[in-house]
Amino acid sequence: MDETAIKVKNLSKHFGSVTAVNDISFEVEKGEVFGFLGPNGAGKTTTINILCTLLVPGGGEAIVNGFNVLNQPNEVRRSIGIIFQDPSLDERLTAYENLDFHGMIYHLPSRIRKARIAEVLDMVGLSAKKDYIVRTFSGGMKRRLEIARGLMHSPKILFLDEPTTGLDPQTRQHIWDYIVSLSRDEKITVFLTTHYMDEAEICRRTAIIDHGKIVVLDTPAALKNKYGVSSLNEIFLKVTGRDIREEGSDEKERLGQFIRARKKLR
Amino acid sequence: MDFDAIRMIWLRDIIRHFRDKVRLLGSITRPVLWLLIMGTGLRAAFNMHGISYTHYIFPGIIAMNLIFSSMQSTISIIWDREFGFLREILVAPIPRSSIVLGKALSGATVAFIEGCFVLVFAPVIKINIPPVNLLLLLPLIFFIGFVCTTLGIVIAARMTSFEGFGVISNFVIMPMFFLSGAMFPIDNLPHWISFVIRINPLTYGVDLLRWDILGMKIFSFYVDFLFLLIFAFIMLGIGVFEFSKTN
Image (cartoon, rainbow over the protein chains, first blue to last red):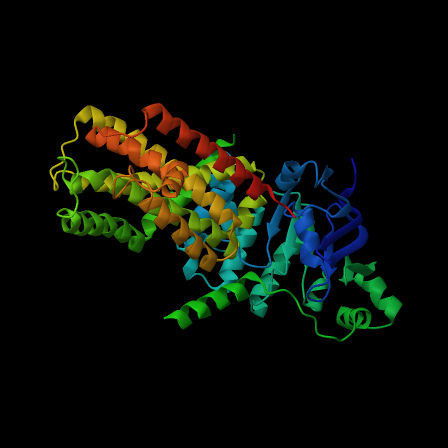
């Protein structure tokens, strides 16, 4: 059995004249927690979108759980769970409905669906809230529900794109403890991005990407040794510089613009 | 065909629809306004060869509720894109064709309910629909709602903003409605208008409804039916293509 969960070879992606990902290569081993770090607009989300089949590679190759993202997208989709950077729950539905529908499109039979829902709700501590409309949830509860949903279909590889952004320290701690236990007990491979460098310390290995290129890739300890510093944060600033980065407006920002435009009209 | 996926997308839209009370209210007031106010107001101005104007526009009002409702249903596609739920669906191991078909069926179901609601007014304006015709009317309403939804899906799939959809759907819904024979007869019109009328799917939908309800028709049943069927297939094809884009 192959021990690689993700294999990326000479991967590139361009949007018009902008190069988002520039000829990167790396491998993620089965069961490892892999940190993918970088400033805004460095190419993290583009890479994740390619790995989870939302974008096709511009060049090079990406193999996820032994399947090529280009030719076997459905096999890849079955193997992975994703917690997106921006929320992707249906806020008009209840927590239970969100999970039930997720189970349906991952083809879990209804009996197994029921059991899994109870299991994952219990894991993230939302059992008591299962019949509440998601709109009424706090940011942390929504995140926990999304994590529960991403795990519903027992994926081999879990992608987490900034899963703890905007959460309080307690919730962040809770989520990371949980992710570590997942990789340890259930042998799930975790591929994560984060802006909190202290969180990246839990990774077995981390890569730092900037301007579409991987700048460093090693275990946190080895990196600290190499750069002679005591924290990942210092390494991060050392290799990516101190300039503040621009990024295209995200969905929430665009929605905000829309609401403001509507208000002006009235 | 992935029946789990079709069922999920259908069921989700139906649940959301019935939780949205404002929209339910809109579907009720729209036909009342048009049928009772416009119908009564314009009755004197139109001479419809022995048929009352309110009777004449009755099938057109059903068609109106169908097109409004199905266009409104497809806004959910833009909504889902803005709020991220579309990605949850797109990363699931389901064929894109099932996503589009699920959307078309849920839009058609909601349109069907809103279209059938207009039938409540039949006794009010004293239209008598024989049971056999009524039985045929139900699948016709569903079918026409389905066709309208496929068009809405194609528009919504290409739109990136709510504003854009509002503009386009008004730009599409209003001309489609007025140039379909819903409100006035479409013979004796200038050449260019009759061309637009002939490529408008709603023309054939209104023709089917009017044939079934009032026994009046312009085209044969087969022309109407085939035009709508082919139109829906083309729209579904474009819709699947749009949903499969990964650039």
